[in-house]
Length: 462
Image (tube, rainbow, N blue to C red; front, side):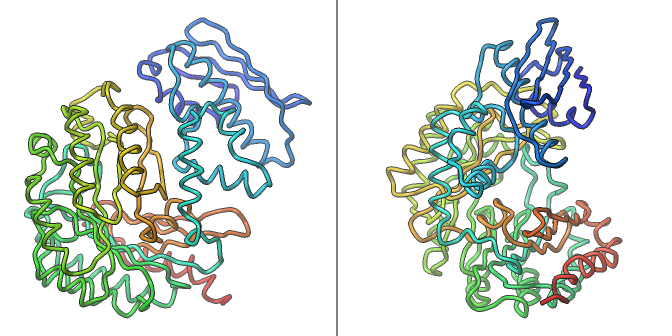
């Protein structure tokens, strides 16, 4: 149980508590005070007292609250680090986007490294942040009117045990597909006048290739009037067991430039455990099938899958490198609420996970890949991160824009979150669609009206 004299800090402090296995069972009492010099935080953790003071200048209420959160979390992290005798790779940082903090420090004319060290981030991750920022040069842009379009196709052949999305095997949701595709057409048509400078289109899921070729073409036809010839265009094709030459040809004919082949692992035993119905050999065949079409390809891997040894993960990294995709994304297993695996597993042993992450960084660097985006999530094993790696010149505009929240994101479909970025005001407004398809269909007229109101303001000013 955790209590604080500042109620708004409790959710922030609980994010720190969840970083340490067993900490949620502790009794934690927190007090924070603003002084002339900065902030003083007092903690009682299972009866042991801790105190920390940090110098800071506060200019305005928003800055005060931001610094109050920062130093309260740092004080609690240091106390729990002492209590459990361990440090974490990202220290007291609990946010999703570490690079945004680095960019903010640079915008203020400061080197970000001292701040990250103060927050307890390890030197390897400080260097990683610097490499990611370098990898975003030429793509990262904060410019009013920039926009990305996301189209959600929440259909999968099966549901993976680590998945927290509201998805079901497509054979159970197939009766809803005709109405869903009609709804997408309505949303996309309504979105066309709201799009500013379109930088990218991303069709995600789910597994978009789980649709039939005829159904997929309906989606691509609806997108066609919105996209520009020079914008990046990605279809997250997904699992290799739903790849066909017909679907790949459709993508090429509609101007798609990038696809994702989501291997997750090259261990057949692991694939069975996580609920996949394909084999490692099918992943290789999907690469071979896609090769002649000239797409930029991303391949996903996950470190920390239950029951997978470090040697099996090392082999997956080597197999992915050998296939030669332009992008390889290395995820760390994250068990959110709603994931079947989380329901069955109270905790995951960190074990060899750090070695897995270190191996992927070393080998991908040696193979000519560089990191260009990273993000973190709650309930992530070992408090690590997800990193997108790219060969030179092949970084994804969509991934950079979304991870850095540097452009508007107009998102359509179930479980899609639209974001209007007000760069001059330093704020973001969001509109989230219902996760389940039936609720999305019922709410569609209201969603269209809400997006017209939010994104239409900017359209009227242009």
